[in-house]
Length: 176
Image 1 (cartoon, rainbow, N blue to C red):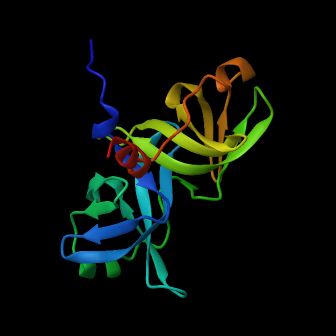
Image 2 (image 1 turned 90 degrees about the vertical axis):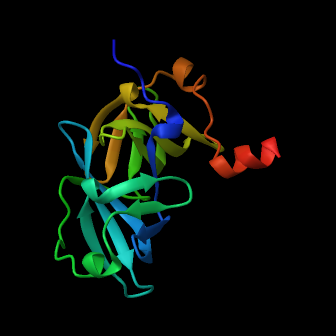
């Protein structure tokens, strides 16, 4: 029997979060590239520069940690900026990606993606899939990953029992 990974051990990717290279802050997370067949994260889009910044894609293997604070890579800023990967591997998802519930005819947008340390999808957080809240959706409910869209199948009765997602910061404030 395989031991399940704790949520605290999973890599959590927030769109717009900071990216840190081994020698300093380097940009923000813009996209995630998934292999749709294996549901494995294969690449990360990093935008460096502000208004007219350049987005480059690095393999998931460069990630050492991904939390609510940011994403840490095991490469230097120079290696990131010199990256020639203009095209991502896999189907791209970003903060405008639609989360479509085919069983209840509800839509939301993608807010967060969590993967196992191996890169396999663990869960997503969908904004307004249920009115007025962010909803944590486990991998078992995800039926398909396409470019810009994730399809889920969650009957209404189950959808309303799924936990609302609360950020690490919200939980920390409540504890304090």
